[in-house]
Length: 300
Image (cartoon, rainbow, N blue to C red; front, side):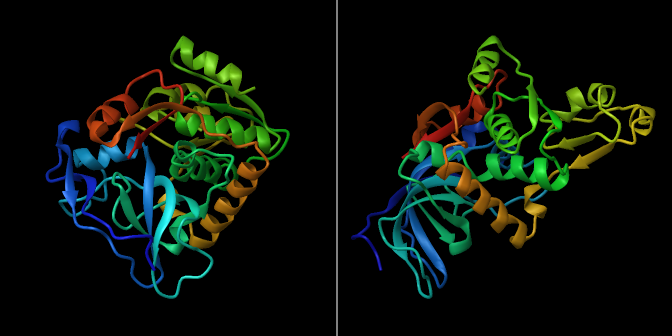
């Protein structure tokens, strides 16, 4: 089933790995869903740092060229494939993963990759949920085993994943401290009421951990040197976090919990900037710049 007749759609295509300039908008053929799939009309696509690593060719898992970037997005169901139940054309959804990439006007997704988007949330906010909130939840409550009453320090807390971690930690009853790299970021944190860059922070973090403390490493842009004795003295754990390593069962539980948080208003993504799809290259530059104060999204 489909919403209406479709024309070729706009999408960002990467023909070769390189700098932001390789992100080019082009017209591609319309998409059709297979069995167990839907096509989502994407109104907003989330831009994540990992997108820039993939584009540059420095990520461990490289896509086959050419490809359309993006895993996060939000919009409405445009077409429904065979053996699909519970989803209808016109339904508002956010996307956490896609078979064809979300930097486009439409994307093919499996039914496990789409989730209901509350009417209270904009498409831009929906595009900020997938990787940032799921990664933060996985880091806080699965890898680091955070519990109510504990204290968590969130580095880069004014960015997309940082905001998510702060909101999720507060919702989980943890006491939260956060760092930000700019005055604007600190103001954004104050309005809100994990370790983001391990190569900068990890060595220092080990010296301030409580006994039995944990460091959950979500991101790093280089090599780090630490003193193992700092971890030994505290019986501390250093935990790597990769959302792609979570089991389907764990992911289902995470997105169910995120849905409850969106419904009760405790999880509200902060959008820093919305850029048109044609400015994907600029979005990649901005998302890697210091002083983030929220999520960068592309609108189509």
